[in-house]
Image (cartoon, rainbow, N blue to C red):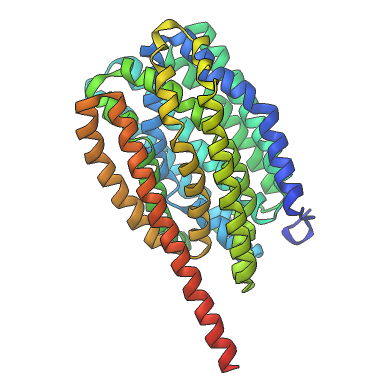
Length: 429
């Protein structure tokens, strides 16, 4: 059986190429289904329910992870022999958490006297998003071992099965809850396939390793990262949630179209982030601070360039992509020209978050993002109640810029502290 120390690691650019190729192969069919087909067949009301359910349950699904994926990303680099223990204990906790999330979604919608459509949309979106978080946990093993070709393969399988299930049920029932049910089937199937491969070739599941006390210790260590993840998702989808609460699904449907289009561009920082985090962690673990700083600088500059290139592309004519959709989505043409300005800052934030996690600054990030989330909640309610969709965009842009400045300032400060400690240690030697 192939074990961790026998896996042939790939280089940085090999990993980057593998992930890029996987995304290029499946991203078009995912975009076609999740944006174009969903909007066309569901209309702005159904598309609004579809996106509200995914947005809300993406936030809730963070409770099924509580930072353990980020913990695994870091600890598996530091302790490669920890895989089986980590996998066994975390799977047990995640199984119980998934059941609670699905039950809570249905109970909350039922007690709130929501429509049957929204009730079941929340249930299937809850299952879909929770299992996606579990799949990301499994992929941490590929990232730690720097063999991202396996993550690329799993991503191709995931998107193919999710789209197949989603399209099939959408075309039969023409409802958001049916599409989400098909998507959840594809996600669960992918999770089971990846788990089987991981169990057989990389980290065997062994129930004799189950130790609830150890699991509690791991989750306690991961909690700051978990709170950070929860706050990030709540902050990220605050506009959608507030718009739904104040104006309903039709408004959310129009707003979600440009938002989802821009989210597809997150492919670029996501690929780089998945590739670079292990290198961030390893360089700091091996006390190579100069290498860490160099890679951080290059990553930030490249992401800034990508972000502004996207802005230019949209303003030079990319916004006309909205004309491909039904006339009821016409207002989204102006919205995308404003929302795209969030992309350069989001690119920077994604890299800064990874750098700060590698620097063990999870507590700071939890506080910073938690504060941003609370501020965004108040700002969104105020601006959205006054300016509707444009208020949500203004709040999003303002809070993203403030958060970026806070994260960058802390990263630079921590690097200076580490550099000073290194100089002092060298002088003492």
